[in-house]
Amino acid sequence: MKDPKTGNYRWVVCALLFFATTINYVDRQILGYLKPTLEVEFNWTETDYANIVMVFAACYAFGYVIFGNFIDRIGSKLGYTISIVVWSIAAIAHAFVRSTLGFGAVRALLGLAEAGNFPAAVKATAEWFPKKERALATGIFNSGTSIGAVAAPILVPWLLGAYGWQEAFIITGALGFIWLVFWIILYEIPSRSKRVKKEEFEYIHSDNEEAVSGNEAKIKWSKLLGLKQTWVFIVGKLLTDPIWWFFLFWLPAYFATTFSLDLKKPSLQLVVVYTATTFGSIGGGWLSSYLIKKGWAPLRARKTTLLIVAFAVLPIILAKFATDIWVAVGIISIAAAAHQAWSSNIFTIVSDMFPKRAVSSVVGIGGMAGSLGSTFFPLLVGALLDYYKGLGNIGAGYNILFIICGLAYMLAWIIIHFLTKSMKPVEEALVE
Image (tube, rainbow, N blue to C red; front, side, top):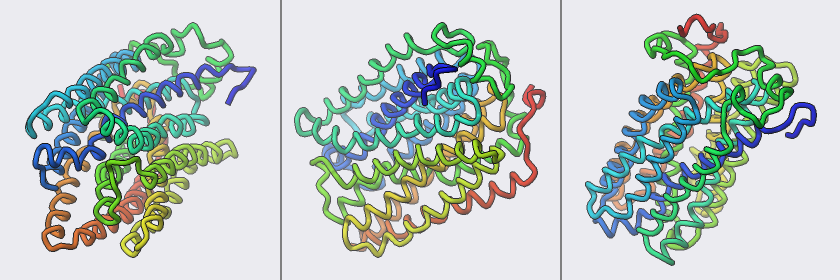
């Protein structure tokens, strides 16, 4: 990644975004691994748990409404700072609640604040990387979602066994404050950074896009919602985000109920699944970046990669036939990795299509749509699993859910394809 002619400080920025995203996902996914313990502690049913996931998702959607436009107005540095301070406080607060209602309240605050992560990270990537490197940079920071998911099945059972569930929330929640020290010291937009060389600054802006000054005017969502380019991102998030949340919050329980996996011990199977998503995130970003460097137009490169990804998810429909846990792990790993490849490219499409000062606002709109889908999907998940659990066949519920997972990405790609047949990047004047 290092180029001696231009410098490589932009990759230090990418590393900061990666670690923030990792912490973001450790803090949200800890719930899935403490589910068996908390079910006993709070006497939860599957529907109770689904409702808590739904509250988190609903507030996460509302958080996108707040942070998307807010970060475009105040900048990525301050916006990220506010987001991680509040979500870290919320993560720690889980340790001190003593009721299901209290637990739902702190999950709501966590969802609200965690929504700032992706608008800030995508905006920072657009500020620091030229188009030909953005998908790779996005893939790298987005792989933090995978690393966070890999760390959770190792870290959380150990913390649970050694200290207890309250301490698990406190220790993981404190990680955000450690990251914040490095963010404040190391990050600034390129035009203000004293660490970026002149040659690297020129390379970052080699696409002839405007440099970000940090004083951007407010952008109206009504203008953005009238553009087909915005709807590409909305569709890409609305139909696929609920699938990823299902992978995060229900896969541990699926392996526990279907294959008797003990979630009180470190889970190699879950480590394998979420490690695969790391390769998917980086690989998906690399592929479209590679195609652009070969001369492909950015949109064609992104759409081709998304189509490959959509085909890669389809085999998850066959997971219902798996009688061995490692066969199921293999099938689900491919699908989960494909989702992360999808995510890397769908985020990058925003920075391809919109001026830098509009990026966080568009990410906020699409992220809200994805989170709204993720708000209602758990209701279906909880209802299905409780229904089939009552019949003594909870596996049938999971089988239906895997069919939905397999078809969602292809449906999203078809809609995106028709939306983008004659699409061009949005001109600056259109968002004024």
